[in-house]
Picture 1 (cartoon, protein in one colour):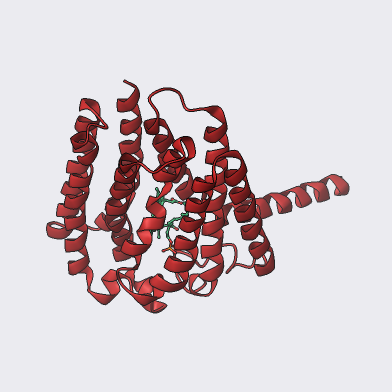
Picture 2 (cartoon, rainbow, N blue to C red; picture 1 turned 90 degrees about the vertical axis):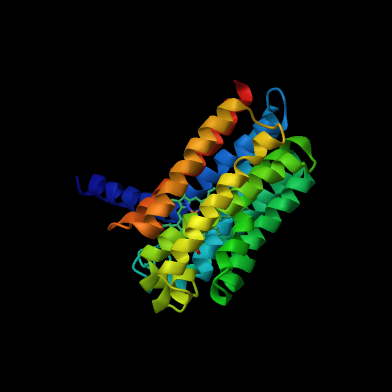
Length: 299
Ligand code: HEM
Ligand SMILES: CC(C)=CCC/C(C)=C/CC/C(C)=C/COP(=O)(O)OP(=O)(O)O
């Protein structure tokens, strides 16, 4: 009896560790990124996506994005320990030793890179490495602490996945792949600043110059609203260049109008909890937008 109880305790312990490592890879963020990778792959070709770049590409890009997220946890562990939203993360809580986290992030990035280089193509491997460095080094280690435009510039790294999917199956750049990057790039500021309004006290406490801290909540709400307008225009680009059709036009216009409406309400008729409502909606917006792109491509 005592032996079986200790086996249960050991397996719970191991499971807990697995969960902590998984948490460092920001699995939900990476999952949405992988959806955009898949859409990039599907839209790049008229027919079916070949299996090898599909599987190796998703795995390799997923591993490198997860590694970038783990590096973000490592670099930010001291400020994360002080913020209400993040104090419970594996590193500040001591669930994962710093040395293990370094090895974990290094292994994930090396395996991901080698997989992409050998089983997909060098172009995708190098572009994914540039995105990893853009997020982990340029954004996290520098921009985040340097300027309120941190997430606008740093957002480019997070916006890259559809282009990575595109190059994984074609081995070349294409303007249409870039349009998908532009969409995520203009989506990022309303996505993040809505959360930053809600969590501004956290950022002020650790001296991170997020827009609501440096320029105030009203200015941030105006920027969110303007970016939703810009995003609405960006979402029309696939139709204007003939990449997507009527189904996409209807779906994306409905999503854009809802986002603009919510940002308008946040600016001019705010009720309690509305900033978080805009943040949560942004995630559904991007997910549905990319699903509609896919549906439109095949229908
Ligand atoms: C520089 C760009 C970005 C910044 C600064 C940013 C920031 C954030 C933050 C602070 C959170 C809250 C996480 C939490 O609750 O602990 C979050 C959540 C999320 N973000 Fe972003 N984000 C960015 C780009 C992206 C991109 C490109 C995607 C997907 C394509 C994405 C997808 C998500 C998802 C799915 C969540 C919810 C995660 C969860 O519930 O665990 N984000 N983001
Ligand atoms: C290879 C590749 C595609 C790389 C992209 C990597 C990646 C996971 C980007 C996610 C963007 C993101 C969640 C930023 C939040 O960081 P934050 O530090 O502002 O937020 P936090 O306080 O929640 O950590």
